Image (tube, rainbow, N blue to C red; front, side):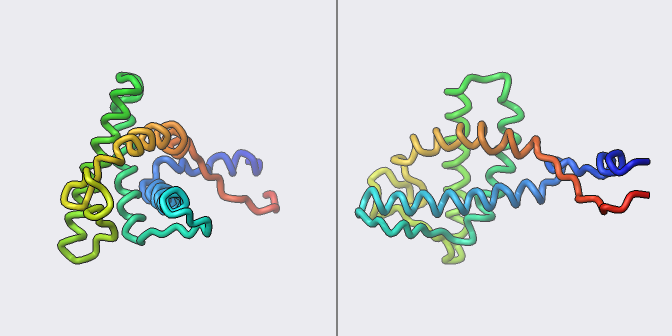
Length: 163
């Protein structure tokens, strides 16, 4: 058996590992949260230092949310148009943000509170002003992140010695 054949046999289908996909989604969520908060400060305060912030809770929140988002994508991908899918992702984002925020608030650990920032907030946990953001973010995440993460494969590097 040559090295190429051995290597192919050891190829690990990345998409079959929920832990690895959770990891990708968690890191992506943290990065996007930092980017978004930095850009928000530029837009609202003129702060060009680009200091974005997040919480480690966001890794779990985004990781689990996007694993569920995969299931939504699988159910909708060839059956529904972009408007419907965007609305489903928007509703999922609100449901998840509200639920996780409420749970974290029980332990005094919720890292966000929209109460004094937005008029359309619900208990300070979600804000209706973010609807366009969640709508677009859901569709972009579907097209750029979920589809590609599900296609990833990993092939361990083989030794340079051949048998």
